[in-house]
Image 1 (cartoon, one colour):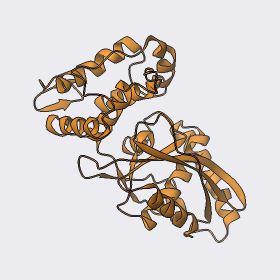
Image 2 (image 1 turned 180 degrees about the vertical axis):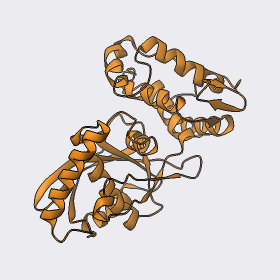
Image 3 (image 1 turned 120 degrees about the vertical axis):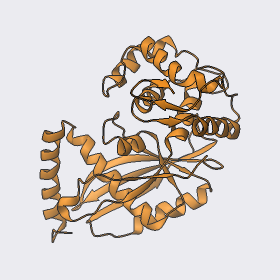
Length: 294
């Protein structure tokens, strides 16, 4: 840490975020949350290595360097239980590092209508120099396992000016990330079997399909493992179209990132990407530049 007091660091950090916002075009609020996320993850890496994996929009944000939709929460996956998660969050809250930040963690009720079998939520408040810096939510889902070894992604250099080094964070492998998005997209929710209200899943599928090559075998395995573990619906043979009610909320989300904003065209691209895998006809690897299996 290159600053002697919390107050001096807070002023320097505010200046750094203003400069970065002007350079990158990202909002200061998004950058502040990114700082809070990274410093809390720094604590989780220290107190609970190898017991969790980062999922959801924040994992894509790290992987694609903020080219994704903004997120106000953090999603973690674990293979153990609620008691272990609560203990790890308590340890993270108590850990003092050389960044002048403190974190207050509050457990809330179990979540309903989540895509995981079991999930719990924490509200986290980050404080710096005696004042609230940011607040966010962490959703922790529990599943049996993931289909392959987690990837490791390095955090940003937002804090390097203060001598705070980057860390490497375990993140969900892209094949499993796609599989979980497909599961959420196709799932029927609640006793009434209502359709998904999560156009963000389609946005994320398109973002991944347009950015990274994917191996047929890895993606098929991830789909089979994910649908097999959760057992809420069978693995479909083709991607169903999204509800018509998604048109406007999807357009708004898609406009925040570089993916197709027309819902019909977006679905057509997603189906071109996923249907050969779901039908068992794909071979080789997905080419994001040619937008085809080869």
